[in-house]
Image 1: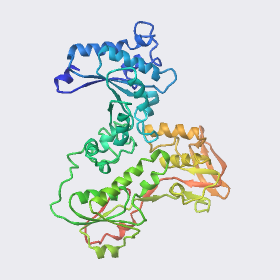
Image 2: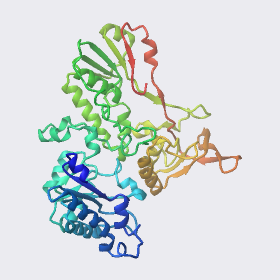
Image 3: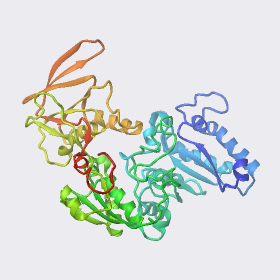
Image 4: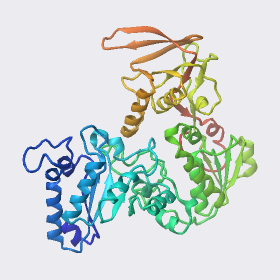
Length: 474
């Protein structure tokens, strides 16, 4: 704390939540001591209060001390809001200047950094209760993406400060844009946790963001005016195509964007349909608005052929035609009772009461949950030893919890062999090397076996007469 003050920081934050050392003293779930640091709430808070007093003594009266505590541990035998309110009083008495209310710990880590399954501002009621028992400012955290919601929490007196983390990775200029009333220009966080909270630091040491490519690469990704204005043609209106068009337009190029379907969004449209991904629609809306403001020519319902490209004569061609679902090469895969997960989510396919979902990746899990929540009896079939190989750890915790609650039956080490009108035949590789072949009854078989690049157009454009760039899933 002394070093922080000497280095010019304005405040020191003591982390006494989320399962860290000080929290482990506060929480009765961990603290089983029988000395003066265990037992009563006052004893369990003793260590934290000593730390606060020690920092105050060393840093002086004018250096602010903030303390983060849990409003709840989300675990039986852990901290609840009543205990948290008493902790807050003791922290105030010890000399802290503010309190920051969070929740969850490693054993309930999906609540520590709540993702897309959770509503925005979900801990405001916890901070509200703490505010009722202390005089020092109280801060709230927990999926604050929309500045209007944050303002509402403040105006209702539920907190004195709003804490944002991931929302500022998605758009570091969010506070300024909100202050100036430019809400439509804020790039929204979608709560995926993919490149930030749930990333594997060993594989990805540098933080990133699914919606903001410049995070931790601000120097490389600085958008500057182009030396020469060029005519850029972008083919494909999914996230890659829209972002490429946006950046090209910001640099001053003349950009036209072509999309084969009747609307922009690509796979984001499908991804936004499950309830847990509702915030993805905000990203689609943001990108479309920016393209319109920047003057990008948008052409939907247009198939781009080599002839059209020859007619438009672009200086550069960006191909962003995305990917298309894989169909398995097994008997019966082309049957009337076989549909793609994307068609199910888009409402293009009728699904019976009993459903087998083939593929236990993220798409299969979300589609299985989507159907189970509509009252379908779902069996999820996955070849690998476990499901969710392409889901991050925080997503998996939430998805598994909801899949179990919704009654989805999960079969791993199970290979789809064939589809027949009454269901499927699968082989199950259990603990032994023996493969057991069984039949599963199903009215509908939903295929969720991944995607393959849709790059057929690029093959026909090798002689386009201008530079051709392939981006995104294609």
